[in-house]
Image 1: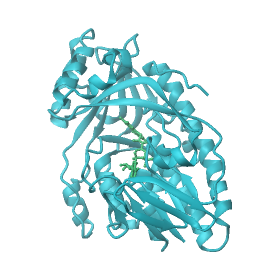
Image 2: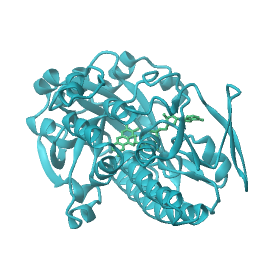
Image 3: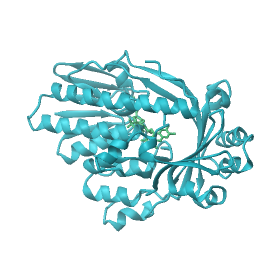
Image 4: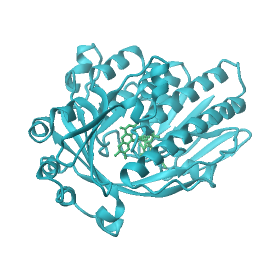
Amino acid sequence: MTIIIIGAGIGGLCLAQMLKKNGMNVQVFERDANASDRPQGYRLHLDADGISAIKESLPEKLFELFELTSTNPLAYTTILDTALKLKRRFPIDEYSKTEHHIERGVARHLNVNRATLREILLTGLDDICYYGAKLDHYEADEKGITAFFEDGRIIKGDLLIGADGAGSVVRKQRAPEAKLMDSGARAIYGRIKLEDARKVLPQLCIADVFTAASDARKLILGVGPIIFPVRPESAAQSLGLDRTLNEQHDYVGCIISGRKEFFGSDDTEVRKKTSDELQQMAIELLSDWPSEASSVPAAGEKGSFFYIEMNSSIPFDLKPHHNVTLLGDAIHNMTPSLGRGANVALKDAVLLGKELIEVALGKKELVNSLADYEREMTEYGFNVVRHSAEMGTKLLGQDPLTE
Ligand SMILES: Cc1cc2nc3c(=O)[nH]c(=O)nc-3n(C[C@H](O)[C@H](O)[C@H](O)COP(=O)(O)OP(=O)(O)OC[C@H]3O[C@@H](n4cnc5c(N)ncnc54)[C@H](O)[C@@H]3O)c2cc1C
């Protein structure tokens, strides 16, 4: 069975690792020109779903590398007032509705640097990962699938997996009935070098998974730390791996988020702003708060700020298909209010990987495996979309989900 994955993001790479580890024939096609073509963003919070999926899919040494380069924060989501004084600390599983992880005895939380995670997920995939390959469309029939790329490449296979993120080309063809809604929430995202963050933030903010301060308008200032236990640039060698990860420094990710009206009336105008202009906008947004708050984005690294428009999938019934499926944001995109999107993408990857291994072993028909995967994945995936929307409405003034 030849398996074609579209998208070398978190979910697609996790699946590719799992299939390769199990000796299966898989190829990944990514639209970016190369692995470091585009900034990957900053901190990601991983919970038991994400961590156990990574453990299951990566070779043992790479999982050790992942652990060596992941921050071990205290498992709390912490709420501050606008003067950055402590109001309440929630155990994070209570906040992000993952109490079932504790019941399973696997509760664990890590903060990871997204670019470092992606480098680890790409390790060992050089021979099966193709860049500059933007999918245009596909054709599927009883015999197999044909993928057509914008550069003229045509690739044939038995199964096509759309792991191509929120704007998925595969989804638009596989499930044209699927809809994304504008959540009404926006954010400016940047980062602060750890030594500068220590000067402007209470210690708790540097210890806990995520800390947020908010006002009556539901404008939020959120922060989360990345402190590498071992420097990425030396971690791989310390494990005897023939690989060097890019140099990184410790930092605190910083997000200023709320209703889109706070950021100006027109997204196209905000998209044109430079990092310096966005940093200034973040400082001004907090100008009504005590000065402790605006000193946080003011301490940010020059050039690190960008604008985020938040969308949400609208849950729907995915009709079965015999040789094309979807995973991650391509099917259940959500706002980052729970910090769960990547975790669910990783969970999908392992669930689908297990089904495909059954097919390869001759224990199951492909069509039945895909149907079982999609039934389970859409049930938990869309539930997390709903929970994220509820939390986003409560905290960020996100528009309620229109189901
Ligand atoms: C500010 C912010 C903070 C977040 N924080 C967290 C967090 O703390 N924890 C968490 O779990 N989640 C978080 N998320 C959500 C998380 O980033 C996503 O859910 C996750 O990246 C989804 O992974 P994916 O593999 O489905 O898609 P992606 O990681 O988006 O990967 C899709 C890949 O497909 C490629 N692609 C797209 N179109 C094509 C095409 N036509 N042809 C070929 N390739 C294509 C893209 O270039 C990309 O590499 C956050 C999101 C944001 C915006």
